[in-house]
Image (cartoon, rainbow, N blue to C red; front, side, top):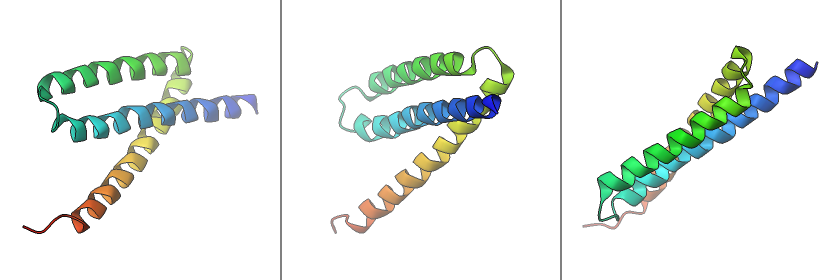
Length: 100
């Protein structure tokens, strides 16, 4: 029973990492337009997101492949959630776009 709880907590950690990574990507793409140096902004964001996410996977997995798999599952579920939320936000913005 403890293994199941451990895997669920590891999947939850993976989901948090996924929200951080993909939410950060969404924030970066939206903020890159207003930035004077879009390429630098994107590169810095990528390095930060990869570093935090990679280290988070390392800590959450605990050196076990089962932990890594559970973390990856949570990460991919968070990707789906962020994708759904960002698409809903884009549809909402498209409905309120000013007419030209």
